[in-house]
Image 1 (cartoon, helix red, strand yellow):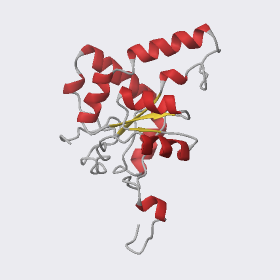
Image 2 (tube, helix red, strand yellow):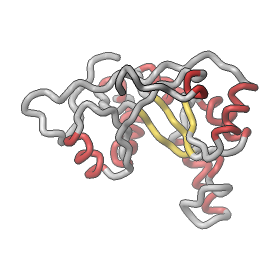
Image 3 (cartoon, helix red, strand yellow):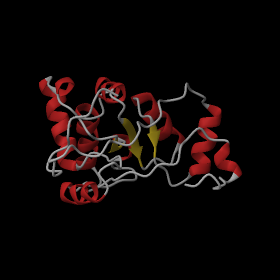
Image 4 (cartoon, one colour):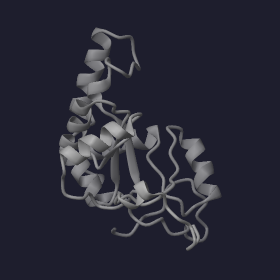
Length: 186
């Protein structure tokens, strides 16, 4: 962005900052993206997300450096209603309960936020889902209906959430991107 760039009037009224980040469920894709632009913030891949859960439940998470800036995750309440990773019915209901119990833990989300990692839940299109996401500790949501979300946020003001951390510094010399380099305290 140059200093002459003008933001649309609706953007000036928000507290959000323009940002781009890498996100993919596939680890090899994220590695390629990070190799191309090492300072770009990035999210957890599926593999790293599963590792995150393993570290959390083993008690080791506070001691492991994380390079990710954001965790994108599905809100379990939409499984079987609007998102169907498995056949609709009892399997979806069971998957929703398991994901809610295992992955969407408020202490985990608070820990990530304390480390400067944003927690974004997707794809939420109903007021009850916005409420559930923020009650669970999400710092943001992805929606197909931004005007609906805007109305919800206007009707339910909350303290501002922390901003995304600044972009990561370039990798240390000799680091080839096979694992994220340690990040200093944010």
